[in-house]
Length: 168
Image: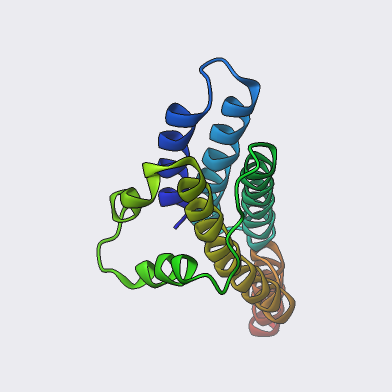
């Protein structure tokens, strides 16, 4: 989902925000940060739960910043923020179940500024929901099992203890 948010944000900013605008740069970077930190957390997951938790949290924060940018954009342009009960929002939400989805799955919503903003707001909410679930799961796993360094310490201590017992 974060990749779709990033790709659509790049399309949105190119289409609706002037080149050279600080807002355009910030939105593109927040979307990229969300995507990249999730990818980096995935790579680091095998060696450090602490770093994985931190990076997923950073991704979540970046997407929250991007969400605020889209909401500000709607407010400043005096456009309507669709409610969660709006049929268009429900339709966008249902697209997450489409197999092999990409940013093109949502391209029909890029025809107007209001529609594009609301589509991205919906996608960011979906992504943040998933990230919140992932963060809770990672936190529980960290509390129950500890981090990589802690597990290495326990294994090393057990090894040393068994080696000492064997030599006696």
